[in-house]
Length: 319
Image (cartoon, rainbow, N blue to C red; front, side, top):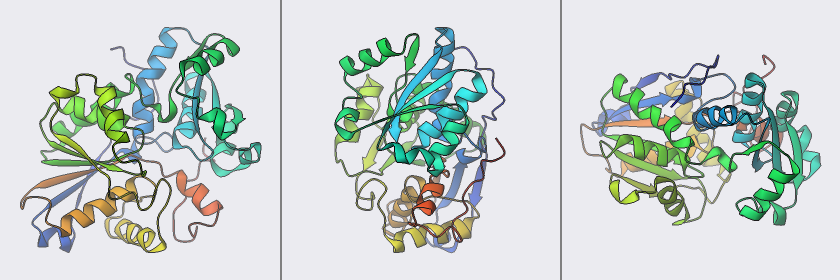
């Protein structure tokens, strides 16, 4: 597969964590900091976009169209990637035009993204071929990327996490948050049954995500080393209690690794619960994949859901 010329740093570091609870259960914990790939396009959003950008350029497409909510990490990343690589971007946004001035979409517009707001009924059509064809006709020479960036071309980009980890350390378990299924599918395919992979569902749709991952894997019967845990969504997508948020913040302070409570933070909560339950075999080495998404803190603080004095919101004015 051709390489994409890019100024973005790809290799992300690993951090060894030393906490009393880990010693108690004889567990070694490592955090794979994909949030450090780049100050703006971080984590799985860049990895899933990487080869989609390659393909869009190979087809000489002039615009990339995708879908997302008003605070979408994917939309935020796509906007900046389009700016960097000189390709126009259009986002179909679920919600009202009043959202265009929020933390996320203000940056997206600054980077040249065009926003098209649609109601929920229209947004539900995003995966239907007839609606997609309508968009392709309306915007000639365009390239479609699904919501969250999860498609077949996302898998090899995400799979590079496994090749990096195999160079950086040995491990037994890998945990990742799961939203649209593309990250877990890419990890599973690249891992080829070497390690035990746990996806932590961040939305309340039991069974749905398993189907999404299996669809992306295609030859899913070849992969037997993964599962999705559905008990750690904290009530649904974007939902969490003040107590849960504080537990995530405390873990961030203890480890000096920033997390947010919508994606990777729920993975942290899952890990701490599984640890206390004795889920991991003693002397195991566990990797938490930090999938980025820290820009989401801006919207949470903007809406008063989190206290901006306690949560470090990234500064994107450098771009």
